[in-house]
Image (cartoon, rainbow, N blue to C red; front, side):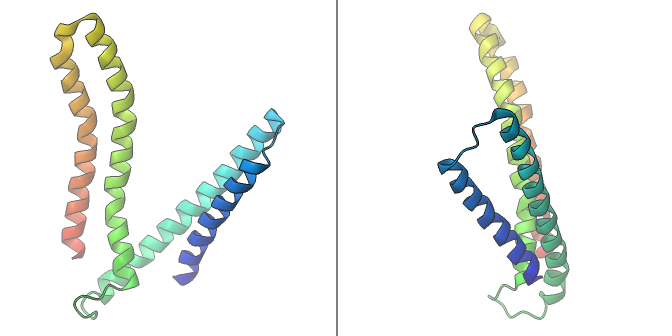
Length: 148
């Protein structure tokens, strides 16, 4: 399990280092830079997602196995990873709601500028887009009730 956490930390440090390097020495050739960025970002994302999921999956089993054995007030590595895993639905749902609210809000403002009487209908559409975040929060609360 520690090697997975080390892999995630190494991946983050390399990403930060690459960002700093590219800030001071950017690639000037547009076509080459586009191909290079696609490969680099795809590899980075793949390593990060696979290592994170593996750490969370292994951590969930550790958390459920060590929960009874750990004294109160002490959080094991497995329980900590399980709590991080429980927060992922809220994070992803909030990200999805942000992606949904952006275009819906822009379209709503355009419609309201032309027809002010459509204000109520556009609020309903914005509420539906923001409801995605509520679903993620509900899933997280259910997972926290299962873990703790």
